Amino acid sequence: MLLCFTGFCSSMKAQAPPELTLHDAVERALHSPQATVLDSEVQQAQGMVRQAGLGPNPKLYLQSEDLRPWADSFDFANQTEDYAYLGQTLEVAGKRSKRVDLAKAKLQMTEASRTLRTRQIIGRVTLSYWIAVSQQRIVELLRQDMRTVDEMVRYHHQRVDAGAAKGVDLLRMQIEQDRLAIALKTSEQTLVQSRLDLFKQIGVPASDVKLVDPIEASRPIQPVDIATVLSQRPDVMAARATVQATEADLRLQHANAIPDLDLFGGYKRNTTDNTAYGGLQIPLPLRNRNQGEVERARASVTAAQAQLSVLEQQVRTEVQQAYSSYETQKEIVEKTLPEMRQRAQQNLDIVGQAYRIGGVDLLRFIDAERTEFDVEINALHAMTQLQQSIVQLQLAYGEQP
Image 1 (cartoon, one colour):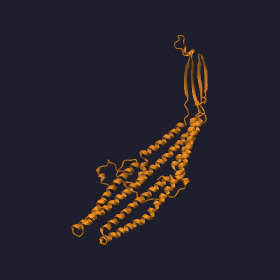
Image 2: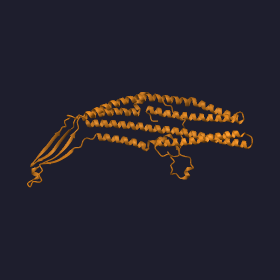
Image 3: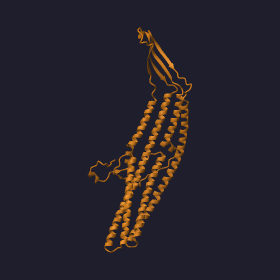
Image 4: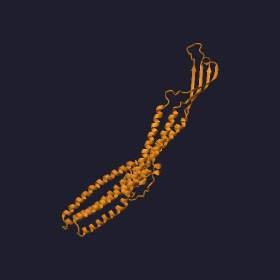
């Protein structure tokens, strides 16, 4: 994709601005810093999975007893007890595998969250793109209308100067010219803001580009059964991974209630005798049996299961609403708009011909032009809403827009 940045030389300014398609905008968004943040979060979760699978390190103990360095007859080699041994904590109750299960469930949560947020980014970029395209078309229509009005003002000015027309018609056209000029300036500013919002959603600096994807282009969206939706919606997948994570956490907390064993073994020198040393340390769970953490984990499971149930119901409602909105906008664009635009154009042609031969006055002609322009604006808004409803339906289905 070609983008025009401020570093271009002045000779480039005379050329037509580079084109930006919706595909290009989405690709730039998927390689922006905001997408990098999502990838980093997944990498962090992958690191936690690796860490969870690591066992405890052994410990080296070096110990001497019966030290009397202040005594004149003290002999360190023959009058002390010296120890050199290793200690190893033995995890019981499958703690390590349960930690790995918990870390993997959290990784699934993170991956599902990345998918969800990535599609939300694509959705916002797509919506902003179509809004900017619509506003670009409105500005083009206004500029075209403005050129027509300018020609009519010059025409009436010449007729008034020649004494062939009344000054009131010229005055009325000048008022219409001023009205269009204000509307054009306002629309141009709205276009600037919509472009800025588009580049904000993409995550790159704004630049001078031409949005080239036609807003009329749309593909039909087929209904998807709710079971498929629930299986592919990333937020539902994240909620299910949350349930799995809380269940894994509960199993881990139950395992943590069982104390680990510390095994010791090594060398002992007792004055002049060299001997082996061994020991076993067993914590006694008399007071702390991890009761609080078990209770917390159990409550988390209940909450996660309830949130999943609520989310699944919300998804069903969202799909119904999104599909209903899509069907309504699709019917408007495909059935209502073509006839409405045709009638407005026919009305303008008829009134325009009548005005040129003096059959109607100027106000009727201006009214016909305004009507045709308003119909085109309404058509653009309707097509924009159709594109937005398509994006919302795809997101509701759990598909990438």
